[in-house]
Length: 226
Image (cartoon, rainbow, N blue to C red; front, top):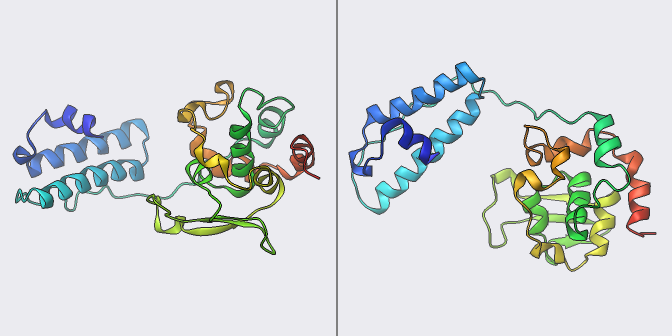
């Protein structure tokens, strides 16, 4: 984001930035939306994050800068659902016998929890004994700030545990998964399973729309859960 901005307007002091610079950056993203098919939502996120950084610096340092990016959001933003992987691909490749053998045990459990909850990887590894409720009438996990910032307000939620997600957390009732370090995003799954589309970005739809129920029994057996 910052590198893109510097590439457009040059390496300037913050106090030298002008509204014309902001317009140039906005036009840079507009051209990418038109020519490269990048979503307007992506462009607006980049513009918004940069704007937020400059606003915060402006306040903390009392720089007296104008609102550089006011009114510069791109129009035509629409929410697009991530494209799920094909059912056959998920069942025959991702859930095939031995497909996750290249991952350590904790990493496999993380995949299982994601599979039946739609939680983000960061949400899974931050679960702890206060947020895992296995003894409730309906076992569930709570996604709470708990020392970290949630991605959105809607991220604060409770998710019931079923299938392999429940089985995996029964194997880690004290949430030792919370200290696992996830590999770089493109390596969360074996690289042979990743396309140009980020594997992690599709985590919610990856399994939940692809008939995972038919595989739950065999995975529970692998986890040795009765």
